[in-house]
Image (tube, rainbow, N blue to C red; front, side):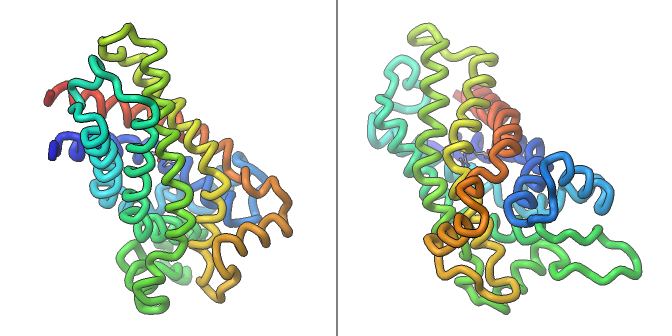
Length: 288
Ligand SMILES: CN(C)C(=N)NCCC[C@H](N)C(=O)O
Protein backbone atom coordinates (compact mmCIF):
# COMPACT_ATOMS: atom_id res chain seq x y z
CA UNK A 1 0.00 0.00 0.00
CA UNK A 2 1.60 3.35 -1.02
CA UNK A 3 2.25 5.41 2.13
CA UNK A 4 3.31 8.75 0.59
CA UNK A 5 -0.34 9.81 0.35
CA UNK A 6 -0.77 9.27 4.10
CA UNK A 7 2.29 11.41 4.96
CA UNK A 8 1.42 14.13 2.42
CA UNK A 9 -2.12 14.19 3.80
CA UNK A 10 -0.83 14.70 7.31
CA UNK A 11 1.56 17.59 6.49
CA UNK A 12 -0.88 19.39 4.20
CA UNK A 13 -3.69 18.99 6.75
CA UNK A 14 -1.56 20.50 9.52
CA UNK A 15 -0.75 23.58 7.41
CA UNK A 16 -4.41 24.12 6.58
CA UNK A 17 -5.47 23.58 10.17
CA UNK A 18 -3.30 26.33 11.69
CA UNK A 19 -4.51 28.79 9.05
CA UNK A 20 -8.16 27.96 9.62
CA UNK A 21 -8.43 27.48 13.39
CA UNK A 22 -9.42 31.08 14.35
CA UNK A 23 -12.30 30.92 11.83
CA UNK A 24 -13.27 27.55 13.25
CA UNK A 25 -13.53 28.88 16.81
CA UNK A 26 -15.86 31.68 15.67
CA UNK A 27 -17.96 29.14 13.75
CA UNK A 28 -18.34 26.76 16.69
CA UNK A 29 -19.34 29.63 19.01
CA UNK A 30 -21.94 30.91 16.51
CA UNK A 31 -23.40 27.43 16.09
CA UNK A 32 -23.72 26.54 19.75
CA UNK A 33 -24.18 29.82 21.66
CA UNK A 34 -26.83 32.46 21.23
CA UNK A 35 -24.95 35.37 22.87
CA UNK A 36 -23.33 36.60 19.65
CA UNK A 37 -25.06 38.86 17.09
CA UNK A 38 -22.89 37.75 14.18
CA UNK A 39 -19.36 37.07 12.99
CA UNK A 40 -17.93 40.51 13.79
CA UNK A 41 -19.62 40.69 17.21
CA UNK A 42 -18.28 37.23 18.04
CA UNK A 43 -14.73 38.12 16.95
CA UNK A 44 -14.75 41.39 18.91
CA UNK A 45 -16.04 39.66 22.06
CA UNK A 46 -13.50 36.85 21.84
CA UNK A 47 -10.69 39.36 21.36
CA UNK A 48 -11.88 41.62 24.22
CA UNK A 49 -12.53 38.88 26.78
CA UNK A 50 -10.04 36.24 25.83
CA UNK A 51 -7.36 38.09 23.80
CA UNK A 52 -5.89 36.70 20.56
CA UNK A 53 -5.26 33.40 22.34
CA UNK A 54 -9.03 32.89 22.55
CA UNK A 55 -9.10 32.22 18.81
CA UNK A 56 -6.61 29.39 19.19
CA UNK A 57 -8.40 27.54 21.99
CA UNK A 58 -8.56 23.82 21.44
CA UNK A 59 -5.93 23.84 18.66
CA UNK A 60 -3.20 21.67 20.18
CA UNK A 61 -5.26 18.50 20.03
CA UNK A 62 -6.34 18.85 16.40
CA UNK A 63 -2.70 19.52 15.46
CA UNK A 64 -1.74 16.23 17.08
CA UNK A 65 -4.74 14.40 15.67
CA UNK A 66 -4.45 15.76 12.12
CA UNK A 67 -1.63 13.21 11.65
CA UNK A 68 -4.24 10.48 11.96
CA UNK A 69 -7.28 12.23 10.53
CA UNK A 70 -5.96 13.83 7.33
CA UNK A 71 -3.64 11.01 6.50
CA UNK A 72 -6.57 8.60 6.81
CA UNK A 73 -8.70 10.84 4.56
CA UNK A 74 -6.13 11.31 1.78
CA UNK A 75 -4.52 7.89 2.19
CA UNK A 76 -7.83 6.00 2.09
CA UNK A 77 -9.07 8.18 -0.80
CA UNK A 78 -6.02 7.48 -2.92
CA UNK A 79 -5.79 3.79 -2.03
CA UNK A 80 -9.53 3.28 -2.70
CA UNK A 81 -8.96 4.79 -6.15
CA UNK A 82 -6.07 2.40 -6.60
CA UNK A 83 -8.37 -0.53 -5.82
CA UNK A 84 -11.22 0.79 -8.00
CA UNK A 85 -9.19 1.86 -11.02
CA UNK A 86 -5.84 0.02 -10.71
CA UNK A 87 -3.99 3.33 -11.22
CA UNK A 88 -1.45 4.84 -8.81
CA UNK A 89 -1.37 8.58 -8.05
CA UNK A 90 1.34 9.28 -10.68
CA UNK A 91 -0.68 7.61 -13.47
CA UNK A 92 -3.97 9.37 -12.79
CA UNK A 93 -3.31 12.41 -14.99
CA UNK A 94 -2.73 10.19 -18.03
CA UNK A 95 -5.56 7.79 -17.13
CA UNK A 96 -8.09 9.89 -15.22
CA UNK A 97 -10.53 7.95 -13.01
CA UNK A 98 -14.26 8.39 -13.61
CA UNK A 99 -16.18 10.89 -11.48
CA UNK A 100 -18.18 8.03 -9.95
CA UNK A 101 -14.97 6.40 -8.73
CA UNK A 102 -13.69 9.72 -7.39
CA UNK A 103 -16.95 10.28 -5.49
CA UNK A 104 -16.97 6.75 -4.05
CA UNK A 105 -13.32 7.00 -2.99
CA UNK A 106 -14.03 10.38 -1.34
CA UNK A 107 -17.03 8.96 0.55
CA UNK A 108 -14.92 6.00 1.76
CA UNK A 109 -12.17 8.35 2.96
CA UNK A 110 -14.76 10.58 4.66
CA UNK A 111 -16.47 7.67 6.39
CA UNK A 112 -13.26 6.24 7.85
CA UNK A 113 -11.77 9.60 8.82
CA UNK A 114 -14.99 10.50 10.68
CA UNK A 115 -14.49 7.54 12.99
CA UNK A 116 -10.92 8.66 13.82
CA UNK A 117 -11.94 12.31 14.04
CA UNK A 118 -14.91 11.89 16.42
CA UNK A 119 -13.17 11.98 19.85
CA UNK A 120 -10.70 14.68 18.78
CA UNK A 121 -13.44 16.84 17.32
CA UNK A 122 -15.55 16.45 20.46
CA UNK A 123 -12.70 17.68 22.65
CA UNK A 124 -11.97 20.58 20.30
CA UNK A 125 -15.62 21.71 20.36
CA UNK A 126 -15.86 21.45 24.16
CA UNK A 127 -12.66 23.51 24.60
CA UNK A 128 -13.68 26.08 21.98
CA UNK A 129 -16.94 26.63 23.83
CA UNK A 130 -15.26 27.60 27.09
CA UNK A 131 -15.62 31.35 27.22
CA UNK A 132 -13.45 31.98 30.28
CA UNK A 133 -10.24 33.94 29.62
CA UNK A 134 -7.19 31.67 29.61
CA UNK A 135 -5.24 31.23 32.89
CA UNK A 136 -5.91 34.46 34.81
CA UNK A 137 -4.68 34.48 38.41
CA UNK A 138 -7.56 34.57 40.91
CA UNK A 139 -10.31 33.75 38.40
CA UNK A 140 -12.17 30.42 38.71
CA UNK A 141 -10.62 27.72 36.52
CA UNK A 142 -12.57 26.66 33.42
CA UNK A 143 -14.32 23.28 33.51
CA UNK A 144 -11.63 21.71 31.33
CA UNK A 145 -7.98 22.62 31.96
CA UNK A 146 -6.78 21.35 28.59
CA UNK A 147 -7.30 18.57 26.04
CA UNK A 148 -6.04 15.73 28.23
CA UNK A 149 -8.08 16.90 31.22
CA UNK A 150 -11.09 17.30 28.94
CA UNK A 151 -10.72 13.77 27.54
CA UNK A 152 -10.23 12.32 31.03
CA UNK A 153 -13.28 14.19 32.44
CA UNK A 154 -15.52 13.06 29.58
CA UNK A 155 -14.30 9.49 30.01
CA UNK A 156 -14.88 9.62 33.78
CA UNK A 157 -18.29 11.28 33.63
CA UNK A 158 -19.74 9.85 30.42
CA UNK A 159 -17.72 6.67 29.81
CA UNK A 160 -16.00 5.50 26.59
CA UNK A 161 -19.17 6.14 24.59
CA UNK A 162 -19.15 9.75 25.81
CA UNK A 163 -15.99 10.31 23.74
CA UNK A 164 -18.02 9.42 20.65
CA UNK A 165 -20.89 11.81 21.36
CA UNK A 166 -21.99 13.34 18.06
CA UNK A 167 -20.11 10.67 16.07
CA UNK A 168 -23.20 9.64 14.11
CA UNK A 169 -23.86 13.18 12.98
CA UNK A 170 -20.17 13.51 12.11
CA UNK A 171 -20.26 10.39 9.93
CA UNK A 172 -23.45 11.54 8.21
CA UNK A 173 -21.79 14.92 7.64
CA UNK A 174 -18.48 13.65 6.31
CA UNK A 175 -19.32 10.61 4.16
CA UNK A 176 -21.15 12.31 1.28
CA UNK A 177 -19.46 15.70 1.64
CA UNK A 178 -15.96 14.25 1.25
CA UNK A 179 -17.24 12.76 -2.00
CA UNK A 180 -18.32 16.27 -3.01
CA UNK A 181 -14.92 17.59 -1.85
CA UNK A 182 -12.78 15.40 -4.11
CA UNK A 183 -15.28 15.55 -6.97
CA UNK A 184 -15.18 19.36 -7.02
CA UNK A 185 -11.40 19.42 -6.77
CA UNK A 186 -10.85 16.94 -9.60
CA UNK A 187 -13.60 18.44 -11.76
CA UNK A 188 -12.13 21.95 -11.55
CA UNK A 189 -8.56 20.74 -12.09
CA UNK A 190 -9.61 18.85 -15.24
CA UNK A 191 -11.62 21.79 -16.52
CA UNK A 192 -8.62 24.13 -16.42
CA UNK A 193 -5.74 21.76 -17.26
CA UNK A 194 -4.76 20.53 -20.75
CA UNK A 195 -5.30 16.75 -21.04
CA UNK A 196 -2.55 14.56 -19.59
CA UNK A 197 -0.75 17.46 -17.83
CA UNK A 198 -0.45 18.28 -14.14
CA UNK A 199 -2.58 21.24 -12.97
CA UNK A 200 -0.70 24.50 -12.36
CA UNK A 201 -0.27 25.82 -8.81
CA UNK A 202 -2.90 28.51 -9.45
CA UNK A 203 -5.38 25.87 -10.63
CA UNK A 204 -4.68 23.69 -7.58
CA UNK A 205 -5.17 26.68 -5.23
CA UNK A 206 -8.46 27.71 -6.81
CA UNK A 207 -9.79 24.14 -7.21
CA UNK A 208 -8.79 23.29 -3.62
CA UNK A 209 -10.41 26.48 -2.29
CA UNK A 210 -13.69 25.85 -4.11
CA UNK A 211 -13.67 22.16 -3.15
CA UNK A 212 -13.49 23.32 0.47
CA UNK A 213 -16.35 25.79 0.02
CA UNK A 214 -18.59 23.31 -1.86
CA UNK A 215 -18.09 20.57 0.71
CA UNK A 216 -18.62 22.89 3.68
CA UNK A 217 -21.79 24.43 2.24
CA UNK A 218 -23.13 20.89 1.81
CA UNK A 219 -21.90 19.91 5.28
CA UNK A 220 -23.13 22.89 7.32
CA UNK A 221 -26.64 21.58 8.23
CA UNK A 222 -25.18 18.41 9.76
CA UNK A 223 -22.24 20.38 11.14
CA UNK A 224 -24.66 22.43 13.27
CA UNK A 225 -26.37 19.27 14.52
CA UNK A 226 -23.03 17.58 15.18
CA UNK A 227 -21.76 20.52 17.28
CA UNK A 228 -24.99 20.60 19.29
CA UNK A 229 -24.90 16.86 19.94
CA UNK A 230 -21.29 17.22 21.09
CA UNK A 231 -22.20 19.96 23.57
CA UNK A 232 -25.21 17.98 24.78
CA UNK A 233 -24.84 16.10 28.04
CA UNK A 234 -22.55 18.64 29.67
CA UNK A 235 -25.07 19.34 32.42
CA UNK A 236 -28.07 17.27 31.33
CA UNK A 237 -29.07 15.50 28.12
CA UNK A 238 -31.34 17.63 25.93
CA UNK A 239 -31.48 15.61 22.69
CA UNK A 240 -32.55 11.97 22.22
CA UNK A 241 -30.55 11.63 19.01
CA UNK A 242 -29.66 13.23 15.66
CA UNK A 243 -33.26 13.43 14.45
CA UNK A 244 -34.53 14.84 17.72
CA UNK A 245 -31.78 17.46 17.67
CA UNK A 246 -32.77 18.45 14.10
CA UNK A 247 -36.47 18.67 14.93
CA UNK A 248 -36.09 20.65 18.14
CA UNK A 249 -33.50 23.00 16.60
CA UNK A 250 -35.86 23.77 13.69
CA UNK A 251 -38.84 24.18 16.05
CA UNK A 252 -37.00 26.67 18.21
CA UNK A 253 -34.96 28.57 15.63
CA UNK A 254 -36.54 27.92 12.22
CA UNK A 255 -34.93 26.40 9.11
CA UNK A 256 -32.21 29.06 9.13
CA UNK A 257 -30.56 27.12 11.95
CA UNK A 258 -29.14 24.73 9.36
CA UNK A 259 -27.10 27.52 7.85
CA UNK A 260 -25.59 28.82 11.08
CA UNK A 261 -21.93 29.44 10.47
CA UNK A 262 -22.11 28.87 6.70
CA UNK A 263 -20.45 32.21 5.89
CA UNK A 264 -17.58 31.75 8.30
CA UNK A 265 -17.27 28.10 7.26
CA UNK A 266 -16.88 29.14 3.63
CA UNK A 267 -14.47 31.97 4.44
CA UNK A 268 -12.35 29.49 6.36
CA UNK A 269 -12.69 26.72 3.79
CA UNK A 270 -11.12 28.59 0.87
CA UNK A 271 -7.63 29.35 2.26
CA UNK A 272 -7.48 26.15 4.33
CA UNK A 273 -8.20 23.85 1.42
CA UNK A 274 -6.23 25.85 -1.15
CA UNK A 275 -3.14 25.40 1.04
CA UNK A 276 -4.00 21.78 1.86
CA UNK A 277 -4.26 20.70 -1.79
CA UNK A 278 -1.29 22.76 -2.93
CA UNK A 279 1.02 21.22 -0.33
CA UNK A 280 -0.46 17.73 -0.92
CA UNK A 281 0.17 17.89 -4.69
CA UNK A 282 3.57 19.48 -4.20
CA UNK A 283 4.75 16.80 -1.75
CA UNK A 284 3.53 13.96 -3.94
CA UNK A 285 5.30 15.39 -6.99
CA UNK A 286 8.45 15.86 -4.93
CA UNK A 287 8.42 12.24 -3.82
CA UNK A 288 6.96 10.85 -7.06
C1 LIG B 1 -16.91 18.20 6.62
N1 LIG B 1 -16.30 18.66 5.43
C2 LIG B 1 -17.13 19.17 4.40
C3 LIG B 1 -15.00 18.64 5.24
N2 LIG B 1 -14.30 18.29 6.17
N3 LIG B 1 -14.55 18.96 4.02
C4 LIG B 1 -13.21 18.75 3.63
C5 LIG B 1 -12.31 19.80 4.17
C6 LIG B 1 -11.25 19.27 5.03
C7 LIG B 1 -10.39 20.32 5.62
N4 LIG B 1 -9.51 19.70 6.58
C8 LIG B 1 -11.18 21.40 6.32
O1 LIG B 1 -11.26 21.34 7.55
O2 LIG B 1 -11.69 22.31 5.67
